[in-house]
Image 1: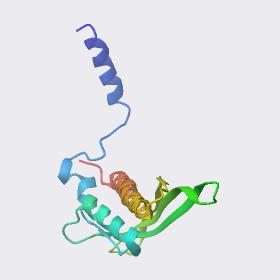
Image 2 (image 1 turned 90 degrees about the vertical axis):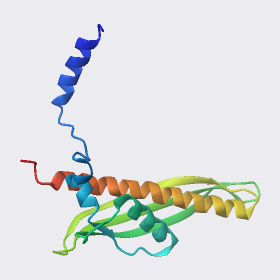
Image 3 (image 1 turned 135 degrees about the vertical axis):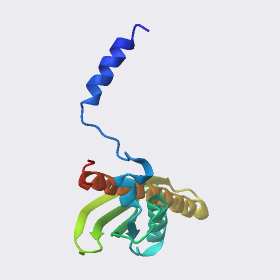
Length: 165
């Protein structure tokens, strides 16, 4: 009970800091509504298929799209650790995305940005296990990069939304 005045003062100070919830208004808010109007353009390859699915899961597009995400992926595996016999003992898988949010009515690029992440992979004696680890890493990276892209598009939507009356 003796901490209540301190908590009240802290709450008053934080209320003026300018922080606002990204998804204010819930499912009918400006950010959530904008995200449901974004379609994902075709992305090449296995990484593209995984990225498309990850983005579609997050965006849940409904209605006529107003925007399109155009994405180019760069997926690389680089050997890092080397054993005495010159075989690779560790790999790094990198997934980078250059993406653009395009206004479909005007054809203009509204957002041009990049996202990416890396994953470390142990190379073991079993080729099957190594391939499985590489595939699992790509799945995780697709999810991480999709989260980054959606967060950036959501921030764009919040910053460009018309102020509430």
